[in-house]
Image (cartoon, rainbow, N blue to C red; front, side):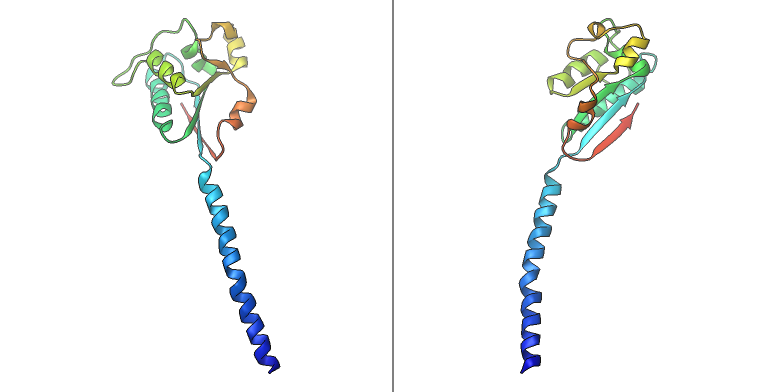
Length: 152
């Protein structure tokens, strides 16, 4: 009788706990799926590398269809986001000015490195309208999920 009671209690505990575990795993899985990943696109190439610059802008546009995107320009990339920068053209890509305006129109944050601006003897006032001076909080707060980085 005692053995039968122990088998019954053991079976009861085993089967009664299983749905709770599945429910917890399902809730955790749903939470992970809800978080949208972000793409951080780093552009260090300048006007002397039109293919790289326009590829970065094209990738930002494509990725923004399904992911959170942020663009960060530093080193020679600063040349691309200045008010007086030339409109870069290459192959089949939209021009740099067209692409930047389109990305800003989608609400994508585009930032320039403050140290690189200073090294280029430029100020935030020299940036195109809509380009922000980089802020470290934006590096991590632009997305809820993981961050994938692409360098150009």
